[in-house]
Amino acid sequence: MFKVNVKEEFEAAHRIPGYPGKCDRLHGHSWTVEACVSGKELDALGMLVDFKSVKKELKAVLDEMDHRYLNELPPFSEGIQPTAENMAKHIYEKLAQSGMFRDGIRLESVCVWESPRSCVVYEPEEE
Image (tube, rainbow, N blue to C red; front, side, top):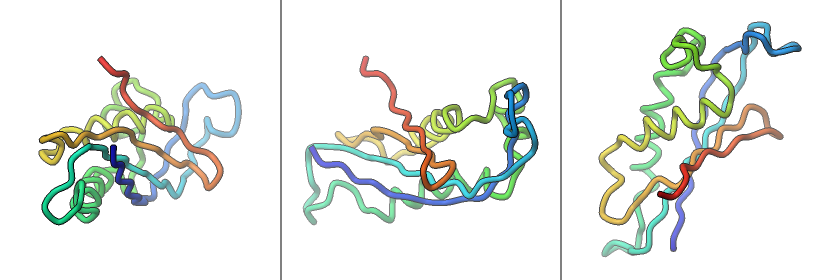
């Protein structure tokens, strides 16, 4: 099994209404998001998938959130808290809709770093 990881960054603000502390107030982060793609077969060039292709798709998802107030964006404007956990799942679901995940290549996980020392990893359960 091969795994390819790519990272991208974006800036955004959020707040966690009801949180018993500072995170209930409006604040921002320099978010780092890492996507992990996996598969067993390499192409004729000896690659699982081109890093550039994965970065392009990840960047397209993150551009929708860059320099935005996340609480105003779906699904966070629809009652889902904009926590790192929910963001990781949301980004995973959006990225998984990309046409690049076929032919034995799958999106394995998305990791959202809220700070240099704190992250959340989302990977769906095997069915």
